[in-house]
Picture 1 (tube, rainbow, N blue to C red):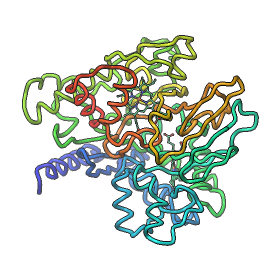
Picture 2 (picture 1 turned 90 degrees about the vertical axis):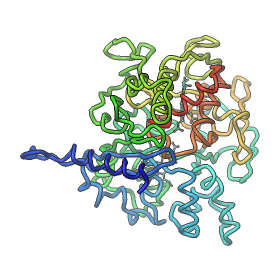
Picture 3 (picture 1 turned 90 degrees about the horizontal axis):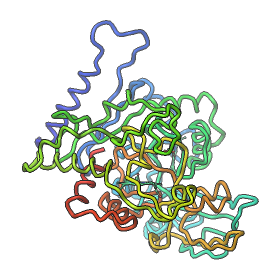
Picture 4 (picture 1 turned 60 degrees about the horizontal axis):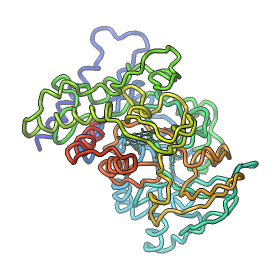
Amino acid sequence: MKPFAVLSLVLVTFIVLLFRPSGAPAINAVAPAILTFDDPLGRVTTIDVNGPVVEKGNPFFDASLGSNGRSCSTCHQARDGWTVSAPDLRARYDASHGTDPIFRPVDGATCPNDDVSTPEAARKAYSLLLDKGLIRISFPIPDHAQFKVIAIDDPYHCSTPTQLSVYRRPLPATNLRFLSTIMWDGRHPTLAAQALDAANTHMQAKEPLSSDQIERIVDFESGLYTAQSADRAAGMLDSDGARGGPAMLPAQKFFIGINDPFDHNPTGAVTNEDIFGLYQPWHRFDDANGQARARASIARGQQIFDNRPMTMIGVGGLTDVRNVNAITVTCGTCHDTPGIGSHSINELFDIKTSDPEQRTPDLPLFTLRCNDGSIHVTSDPGEALITGRCADINKFKVTSLRALAAHPPYFHNGTAATLADVVNFYDTRFIISLSDQERADLVAFLGSL
Ligand code: HEC
Ligand code: HEC
């Protein structure tokens, strides 16, 4: 066995022992289940606080609820941090010769009427899923929208001026207790509404899920806590005083606004800029070699995330609502939820991931004209497709930042292939002026979450 595998085995045994009930178990106590998998940077681990009992027969895994072979877990895989990763999708495609149920024309293909009759045609039809892990989602332009779609540049001919197809990454069905916003565009008010809709659309359910099935699905997914637990270079992420890995998550406090930097914290408490607080003890490894060096890099990355100022110019949701042109923030201004990095209130932002500059030729491009005459060119109008408001064009929710290593690529449209691409995006778009070392440190930190 490789040393890393041995290390992982020791970790798993340790966690299992840690959670084994000692003495008489309390009434209703369930031993949490631990699921752990290799990922490109190390290991990703999930704690299911409801224990394996729930998981086994849970409708989350039941493909018979749909009519196309899919269950929720088809697109929300434990090994991919409860979403999908593009490399794993390619492996699934090859291993199943394209028959894995995620590869279904309804929304796995670039358009439902794509030709999938030959292996070559099918590979082309599923190219966005295979290359970037993108699922097609179709929206009518809302009645009374403040904009009209006046031009469509769409390689797949799957949109009309009144009905747009956009292509988005599945979001992780884990760490859900910390969400202030559900879906990239915030369109579902509750996880129950989300599950009902997911079964109808993605699974082409024969009949709507019963309220009992929905409750069991939501109970199950709400009991999952996932994080990177080991890093190939830095080793166990909870060793030598660090608090990485999922063990700290079940007890992590959360309420809406818990750490909001703009006066939405109901307790009025001062914002804690130390968002994750995982790796301070690893600063002492600075100037060392090998594993210690990797640890010091992660600790420095955490510091950059919490403290490094950057100037955001014309960022919808941030500058427009304050009537300023530019505002100086840190990563944690938006990724403010302690221990998780999502946004602690329901507030979406346009960080320019749908801009023409960020668009790759495999994504559609839409031109919108607002009632005030302004023109917006975008590959996915985001929240505006729900609200119809021009002010919401290109706004997306602030994702949580756990288990990132397990599910490349990044952003709603998969336009950042790696965490280094994410950091480069912020560095160039928002003029942070990071040095090469600082970029590497921030990447190492993101990979350790
Ligand atoms: C074909 C793939 C697919 C299937 C099957 C699927 N989902 Fe999803 N899921 C997605 C995509 C894509 C999104 C994001 C879409 C968006 O925001 O527009 C998503 C989003 C979610 C979210 C939102 C998480 C967040 O952070 O907001 C949850 C929760 C979720 N799915 C649970 C489920 C459940 C429960 C089922 C089964 C009933 C299910 N999904 C079936 C692809 C899928
Ligand atoms: C103005 C608010 C804001 C700031 C500041 C901000 N982010 Fe984000 N972040 C977002 C939003 C919104 C998204 C989702 C955008 C999308 O997918 O289109 C996101 C997405 C991400 C993702 C991708 C997650 C995934 O699963 O795809 C990473 C990683 C990330 N941010 C890291 C950072 C880092 C590092 C910084 C500081 C350099 C930072 N963010 C600063 C709002 C912000």
